[in-house]
Length: 252
Image (cartoon, rainbow, N blue to C red):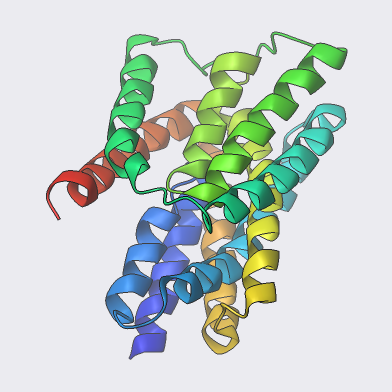
């Protein structure tokens, strides 16, 4: 029964995450509820062991249908990989608990800005090219990558928002690029969890298959319906993140 619950959760998480991020909103609580006595690090490692495959598959599927700025994305992915390691190391020294109360407010600002700017992310009009695009993409990769290693909830959604707001991507291109960056940060964190022995391989492998299936379905939906559909999914996921993180911070 435990295997069935977490596998179904991984399937749905992969579906949502492939479009706008936020899969951890589904899978991590499912793992924590199913295994309340397990070490959190082991559950986080198992989550990464599953989600990295779905994120990577989504990145591959998007790259076949969406033109991505690889000269900017690859250095940004490397920056995210390194920064995620730094964040994961810092969390062993400093507790991230203070972020729990701050995160709902940040997400609320993201939601408010997205709703206020009706044309935000509707058209793909990159603001920069060349070195400037590389530099800004690396800054985004490093900043959100560090956050992913240190705390994590909503990483994919933050990637999407930053790529839309600061680089001028539409939501479809931003989601595709975010999958590349998020795959790098997930790999970084997964490597650390494996090194520390915090992963249940027998669960992670079954969950990975389900996550890939969900990811393929979500990517197909995003590519079929386009940037307007992805924008509304983004709004829905960020709203759900606000509710979940607000509950965890102030009511639990």
